Length: 424
Image (cartoon, rainbow, N blue to C red):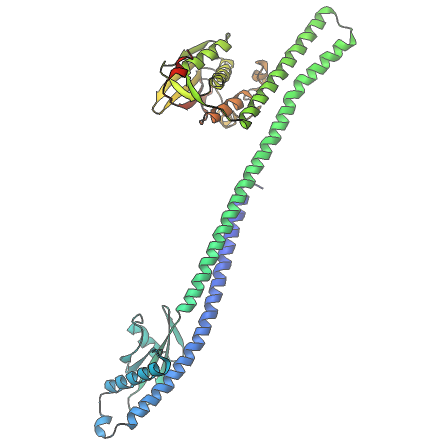
């Protein structure tokens, strides 16, 4: 499965879960709201009946024309207060959240402060439905009173429970979705890495098989000629030389593979190393290569001297095989602040940009024909990359075709002491 398809599948899964969670939350909200609406209707009906009885009782306890002409607002206030007090005495708390309206104005209110007057007026006008305003349900109705002026009642019911249930479910679902999505992303990432590892292992086995096939074919062929006993002295000498050359190639390859495996399996102990000493070791191991070295005497890095010299040697040999136009490979060590910058530079044929990311892959060669002619196995740069990783850094390649290549490595500075001074 390709990387894009894996992450697209994870995105689709996350989107599907988000839609499912949203739908489930909406369904839960609607169910809770329906239940609250039923309770709100019952409460409204109780309020209507109770308030009509309260208005009738207020009318019966009064007499005379003066009462009939008394201000309606004061009547509504007395009735509302009496009903609220009665509810409190019966239930222990004022659950009758309502307002009395006269000619569109609030004459008495026991509503929460969060309920706006405009919403109350709208609910009083729409007496055939339930309005949801914020987290409050509003129900309106007209009271049957013995007075000549119309009185409307608006009942309010708290719907916060439905919102709380929806939010709890939604947040829980989002948390589960986040965990599942994260787990899917981690699984996709590890699956991708596993696929890359399998592909690299497959390439490694295929490349190793190809590397072994060529010398083994030569060994078998020349051994078969020698076994026949029909060759003259010159041809026997040629066959023996070929057998020796191919056997040496196999031995070199096996040693490099063992070194590469050893770096991957074992830790490397880092000690102070003078860069000039490591450069000198590389020069001694490459008598046929012209090396131009420049390293300050105070340049001391935290590394392993043998491995650092081997890293420089492999890079210098690769640079020399690139055919530097000025006839030399340049080794430089310069101050880079907290690190020393080591560079191996040549003016050879250069490397194409598309090949740079693959240089440290085992058995990868930019020019296979030239590499074989120089006896290269394609493991050297992979070994250099492993050494750099053991030192806590990495190789950086910069190259232009026809102009040359520069390999850079940054190594941590280390104060010079007796051990480093003895390396001269």
